[in-house]
Image 1: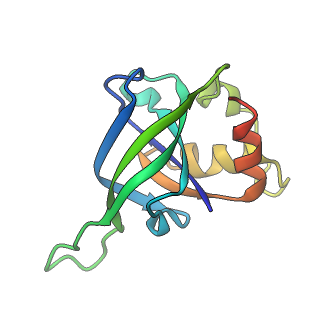
Image 2: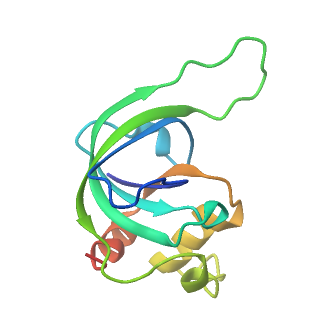
Length: 136
């Protein structure tokens, strides 16, 4: 399975990335070492969307806090960049894909990343992963 992360990325040119305690949604909690991941620099933190593709070099679940009834699963991951995006793909490019039932990969990305615009790790369908692979 392939995954994507949208978060603040301090140095988009880095070869290695570490993301601690990241929120997961849409199957993101199943991320594991060796998985393919697409990195999106969060537009809420000055990013421009898709910047890189990488491979997860480590993944570790973050323990839930005691006393909290509802908690979103979180994981900490390390990623090695394997490719840089050749063209942009971010909120502006995905904004018009809002027919949630159309089955398009662009709509899946818009729904999972921007319907609730928090930073997160998400699981991707094969169709969405193949679509994103075309940006490298």
